Image (cartoon, rainbow, N blue to C red; front, side, top):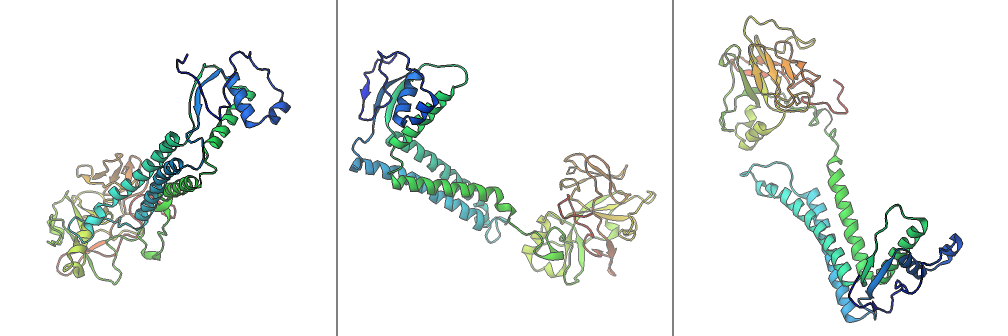
Length: 389
Ligand code: FES
């Protein structure tokens, strides 16, 4: 029971008469004819709601104080709309493709995640602040006490509860506060668009724009102009190019190699990019001489003697399959434990992978260096919709 005196404002439709007994339940027709105020009053009495105080924030509409409060509230929604716009712009236009710290544009790239996080976060924050400010500054100030009732509400309770919501909305003056109405619309519209952009923006891309040379179909081993692509080591220095000869690997050894074209030698950026490219790494494996080999139909000449080159990208979900066990000739993927048989065209023999690792056709040039005779003849890595192998 409240000890505060009741404060009945000019619009206090919900104050019950304490001397009045439980009101008669109106019929459906009477209910349909009742005004919003009548329904609110009835609902309060039926729900055992005691209205302790109920006061308009601004009993006289249009005062300077009311306009100032409106502007303060609208300002939060405008901030939310602007931050939402900034988020959408950054999501679409900010440089998002990886750049090394010393590469041109590397600093801007490093800001991509903070920028989209901050703009989106501030938009949600400002929208929330706007709602709080609206509630505190413009909604009628009331204090009510209600006894708790169990069970599902009856039809009449639901009608009166809806009427109470409508009444609160009407008395909050949202209909006549055009600045707030429009700023809320702008903030929620832009923020809603931002959520859609974040969810679906990454899908608005045509992966087949470059036809046969589309990214899903070619790797760093592809050569458009017929330039020879060699196998190189990663020495830790992108500009230090060390090519591979067959004798560099002991029987039973495995080494990760990367593509190299002579035209890249004087372009440090390209040399670095190739080493960082996800589809570049290849496992070069030298089987022991006595190991029985089964080759895949159509790929009988892809190896060079006992040297076999397989992509490092797992055909299950794309993890790097970096473990080679020379006693069993198995390649292991650490992600979900798929195993591939290196002496049988890297076919899967254990785990969830269902497709062999793609094999790179290799040969040796007249100076004794290993090179790729072509790119992989099938896409590397996991399945995608258009893949037919
Ligand atoms: Fe290799 Fe799943 S990614 S087993």
